Structure formats: C-alpha cells, structure tokens
Amino acid sequence: MKPHALLPKPNRFYLLTLCLLLACSLPLFPQADSPIIGRWDLTVEADGRELPSWLEVKLSGTSTLVGHYVSFAGSARPISRVHAVDSTFSFSLPPQWIGTHDMHVQGRVDGDRISGNLLFHTGTTHAFTGVRAPELLREEPAKWTRPRPLIASSGLEGWTTTPGSGTNQWQVADGVLSSAVSGANLMTVESFGDFKLHVEFRIPEGSNSGIYLRGRYEVQVEDGYGKEPASIYLGGIYGFLSPNEMAARKAGEWQVYDITLVGRRVTVELNGKTIIHRQIIPGITGGALDSAESEPGPIMLQGDHGPVSYRNMTISVPQG
Image (cartoon, rainbow, N blue to C red; front, side, top):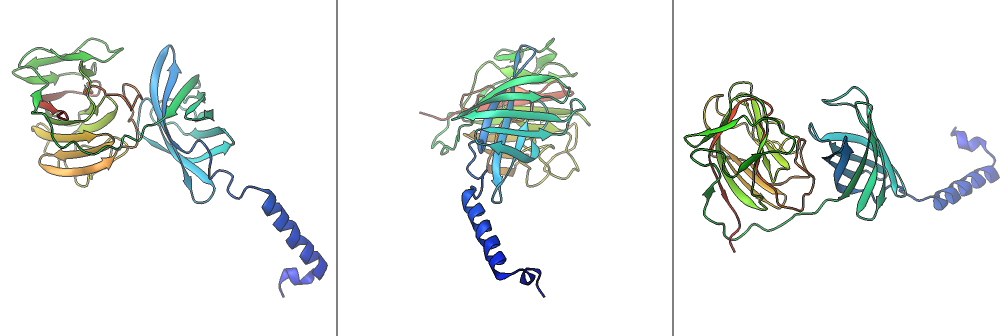
C-alpha cells in the first residue's frame, strides 16, 4: 500500500493544492538569469598595486551556478558553486600556490560592471572591480604584412622589463635573446592586436618560461619531452587549452612555435605540427600584465622561472 493512500481524500487534495500554490509563488530557477553569468575582467587592489584577475560564471543544469577563477598567479581553477541573490554573489576557493586559507569572494553586479572584496589565501582583504569581458570574436584577416624581426642582432632595442621587475638579466648575442638565470620578465615596447608570431626557443632540462600574447595569454614554454599533453605543459595555453599531442623535442634542442592570434582565437604550431587550431581563449592566464582584454598588448617573455633562450622571433600584423 502506498503511504499517501492512508490519508483521507480531502487531506490529499489540500496538500496537492498547497504544493501547487507554493510552486507558483516561487521563481522556478532563481539563479538561471543571474546578472553575474558571463566572463569578467577583474582588477584587484593589493598594497598599492593593481593586479589582474578573471572570473567566469555559467549555469550548470537548471539552477546551479558554477565557474572558473584566475588569480594574478597560478592557473584557472574551477568554482564548484557560485551563490547569487539578485545582484549580489559570493564563492570560495581552496588555496593553490599562495597561502593556506580558503579565499572568499563577495561582490555586486551593476550592469556590465562588478565590484566587491576578496579575503585572500594569505588572510588579507582586497577590493576589486571588474567589467564584462569583450567577445573578441573576429574574422581572420585576408592579408598579413611581411614578417619583421623583434630581436636585434645585439642589444635589447625594442624590449624592456615589466613594471616592478628587478635587475634585467636578459642579454642578446648573435641574435639570440637569453636569460641565463631566473630574474625579470621582458616585454616588447610595442603593443599588438592580432598577429602571427614565429619564434624559436631552447629550454634546458627542468626549466620553465612562457610567451604571453598581448601580455595576457601564456603559451607555455617548458621541458615537455615525454609528457602527456596538458594545458600546463609545453604547447598549452596555460590552464585553459591543451594541445592535441605533445610535439616537444628533447631539452636543450631548438624548437619552433608559429602562433596566430585573432581576437580570442588562437592557433599554435609546435615543431611543424598544429596542436591547437583556432580555439577560443576564455580569459587571461595567471601572471598576465593586466586584464584589459579589449586593448592591444606586448609580447612578454617569462624570465622568473628559469633559464631560456629565444631567436628568430618575427611578427606579422593584419595588412590594410
């Protein structure tokens, strides 16, 4: 016998009616149209500095909000649940590389802008602001300019260290741009929008570097020989896009990148093999110079993770 059959008929009718009334009086999916849904370019205030960050929130199923967060260091991390009520939101994340505390974020959406505070993994509180990230979905140009070199035969003309960097350890000899020890990051003085970048690089065993497109999206440079392909290894867009195969040569050998960036779409060729084809980069990666995705930016080379050398670096931009 079913349990509800024990109830008198009027009671069963009353309960059914009450349930229907309650269901009609409440929003069916209270978070499905939350204004926090989308991608956000953030700026965090920390000790007088402005540090870039990024947030994505999306709907999972009918009423659960989930997402990803990129701090000013590290990789994109999944958010298991974003709590949203009207224009307010909050979420928490465990530590990754820095600190020991969970990070707690709370904020408010105002149209295409957000603001709030985060309690960081180190126990310090910081204010943040943000804007809705641009789509940056553009068609590939019909023509490109002829490639021009970015590395001189000698000297660092056209290059400078990133803001806040220490002593510059980079040197150029016979057209090879090298960082023999960990130190400052280096970037071009010139900024770029869409481009085709050709570069050869050599990485010692166990070392690590990266090429930041527009200073915001890191293409990983590291000793990847023999590893399974992953977004954090050679050929990946750090923390976001994984190559379809590991095309690495052995450490100490010269290797070749050909990278095309148009809006958010990136194509990466490593040693003659297309390992990422016109994939969309969701947002900035950890270590970015800023979060101003709508603007051009420099080519930045990571020099604070170990020795690396670059040569034959050329760039083409849309023609006309």
